[in-house]
Length: 239
Image (tube, rainbow, N blue to C red; front, side):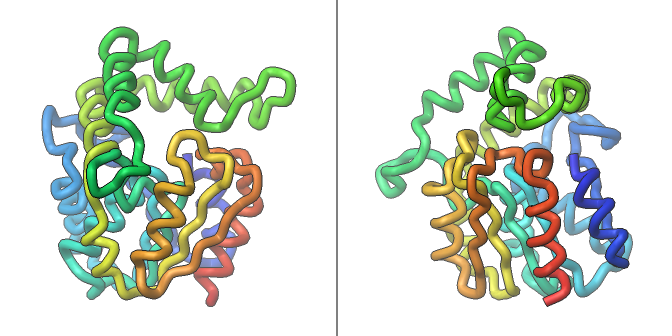
């Protein structure tokens, strides 16, 4: 999914590492460990194994939670900057102290869809990702099929557990601990992770942050608005 960004970042002379989350892609698919503390521990293990320093972490959607929880749990020692792109923090779920969040019923419907017919659910979800319109398609049908194929081969258990993780994990305290320069990028037409409950709130909680809004961009802006996203990412890396 990061193909267009990897090409741009490496062409600009940077080392770019894109790893598959446990349960997805070419990573192992264990039965458990899809909570954010474990996912952040996986990221920490990777950074330590490769002995990486002066790292810029970039997390998309659910991955933004991994960036937040990593910085909350492990600090900024190896990290110089962070990017949250269409990211789920600070807290999606509607609760008494988060009244403008997303209703639990939305996540329950997603869980039911994955349980009852995962492949069909993923097909519909993939279209929502890019705000697909048959009359004015934002991406090609081939690209839709490719994205669907990637999602279909993920662990069904991981797919289920990750819905619960990104839908119900509270990152507000993690964001308050972030001190490195942080770029928040979000589309104002994101129907998966609405900017009002995510990007705008994160910008208020992270001390040294800047919010960049991509006009008309859906959740999957890495495909639909790749050129604009790449430009923002590279400017931030160079700055």
